[in-house]
Amino acid sequence: MHPQHHTLFIDYCAYFNGNEDFFECHEVLEEYWKDIAPGDKNHPLVGLVQLATGLYHWRRGNQIGATRILQKALKNFEFNKESVFYEFLDFETLLIQTKRAIECSKDNGEFYAFKFPITQELQPLVTARINTLPTTDNEYLLHKHMLRDRSHILAERLENKQRKSRR
Image 1 (tube, rainbow, N blue to C red):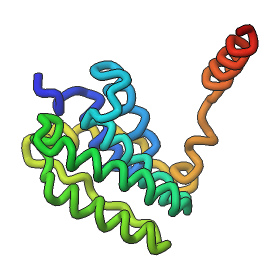
Image 2: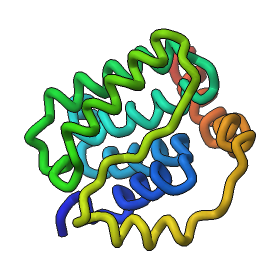
Image 3: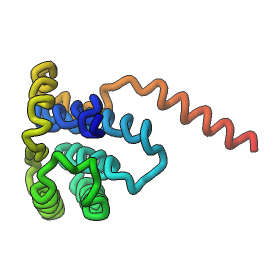
């Protein structure tokens, strides 16, 4: 199976182009990255995670954070330009869109979403997945990170803190 046909990659594309749920884009692709290349911060999937994260920050009005993470995404894209993970993307359009988003967020421009530039190879898979997505309102998308169950994250932080204090 081609790595871009993986369910989590298709989910990323669907969340991006369907309901523009950039938080969920980050979640699903981070899971895929951790499965295949944990710890490799230069992996091409990291750039795509950063793209979604940057758009999420920008939507929330955090232009400084958005600009910073979008610049990291662009650097990752350029570093990995020959990657198989970009094979079914219009890579030049991805670069242009990312550069425009960086400039706009840097200039405190109003957030806008763009379509993730997939090719015809992925379109049927992505469209089928988009058709299963729930409808979401903008307020939910804007504050999604605060609305999720964070109990496992808080427990992990507490455990790490306790472990450090025992040293």
